[in-house]
Length: 69
Image (cartoon, rainbow, N blue to C red; front, side):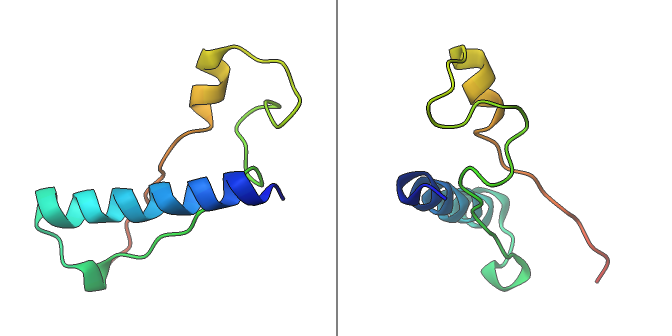
């Protein structure tokens, strides 16, 4: 996988968790995160593929899985 995109994805992960903790009052101990880089795209817009900005934005996402305590 592309090292830059993996690093970017991980930084977004950390930023998203920080936002939820700071703005939502959720304890950091209740959250986990993972960055996937280009390994789990929602479309075929990887490196070297010509796509619109809107198509690329679909891959810049955070997904949440809520589990029972």
